[in-house]
Image 1 (tube, rainbow, N blue to C red):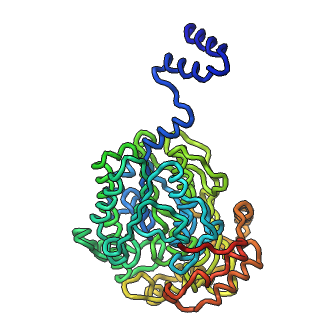
Image 2: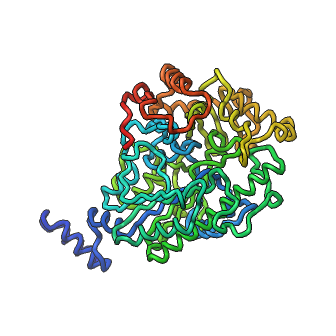
Length: 522
């Protein structure tokens, strides 16, 4: 120690020009290796860290590793055992394009402008910095398999795109083909890569079997309906069985993909993130602000960096994915992001984290427009329904039965009992505010809003929600902007129209919500 101190003092006395060199030489002497300069460290982290982002469609945490006994998911269970499983992970919104826009940009939809489906020409109001654009600046080769589903597509400069509907679509789900294309991308270069793989399972239609997967499909007698739906019956159980069959096929798909990563020799230096894009399309799930729409599976594996088998209870969100990836590769963090890196949570040591989590909904496609805002803490959940001049059109749509879908029948709802019918009335005729005790009422069946004994809790959550809206410049806090958006949405056809009938010029909301002109789609 005396010798080391002498050397250190000598190093401090050398001239300014050689000060850094002296420090490096001293480090070599004491530790046997030089500390990297910041630029060298950044380059080294890039060389050693690839990123594989896996996104599945329309499924909540209905996996074996999350405690669902109706389905076996050995590959995802193994991934969780080798990494960190987030027990309370949430999307920014339970709608496809809106959710994906938040994953890509680290912003809420009301910040980036993607407030509805890309197929119906909703779009971000500008080409926001996003995962591929930021990683390309860091020397990464970027690829995407499956759908992008955010506009404008030109904002996402992927080096490689593959979305062959013969193999990767709602009707065709060839998990072997997807794994093969991923392998080609992974092995194509020694350059560090970011690859996003999007799986159409478990989106409707729920395909019982494709290409022999699963080998022995589940049937109605093997499962129960998802409990948050409240309704039950043979038809709904058959729907649930096929939903679980999609989950089993998804698990097989991810297993094949991870095998390709091992085969390519990249498993040990690849950050793997698996997340769902929002909850399942059962009543009170997808397109809602209930937990069943917003809560998703999130599993992160990073060999040597993430503790194996760790389960975290903190409130994390998909707006955290972009900052986490940038943190992992040593990239500069933009200052405008709504999320934060969850990398500190990959270690066992407890860390300070957020107390409140926020989410929203605008509309899926016309006429499913029904803007909402929500906030929750570790126990209570508040939902604010911004429109009181109409019933919730999402609930009305779920009441219409289409072949093979889990939309409930009136007879099924009638058989569910008075309590469930009351829950469905709250969903359909949404009050201004809903409040739930998630500890006692995890499926949000008992609205506590306006009860005197919960007034302080409701006020606290309202205050937090208003602060978040102000911090993130939520345009719908302005009643005039909300009225204009409602007028524009209501001017669209009231029945469902095919997306081909929509043009980008249909929408003017960028101008009055954000003061921008919508960018070209391509």
